[in-house]
Image (cartoon, rainbow, N blue to C red; front, side):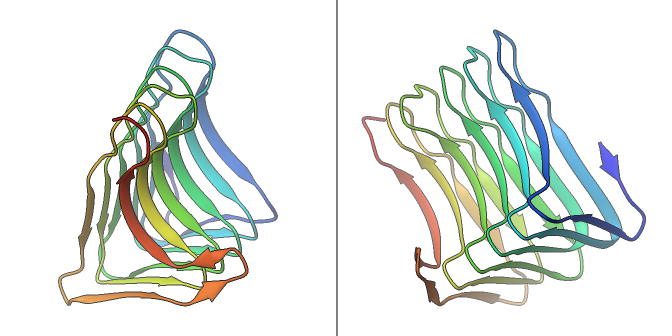
Length: 178
């Protein structure tokens, strides 16, 4: 658990990671800033991964007043091997979740992995996905994708814009044999 009272910022391509490289599961990572913002800026990453591991990737939760990912930043729970990827839960109490300029939230089972992708749940007053950004749960080979839940009580969800890298998206898909 990583807690801050007013703001948690990662910038300049910073990475916060919990990964498994052996037979066990990776840990669960929880970011808590109940009275403020979690910000990932300029290609910064929060990763929970199972790499060369028979275990599962742990879950990842963000609990904050707001969440912003900007300029190629990402929050990711993935598997690259036998285990399943963990779930990704974003709980923003009063503010917004904003993904801007090729930024991503995802749970995935990557190429050559045999595990399943985890579910992604977003709870926020407002969700904005712009300019080539996206949210997904994807199984790229043998596994199945998780579920994708978006809960915006005021009905404010925007998915708009493109970048040189593609269109903005919300996606749950199985692309292989799962």
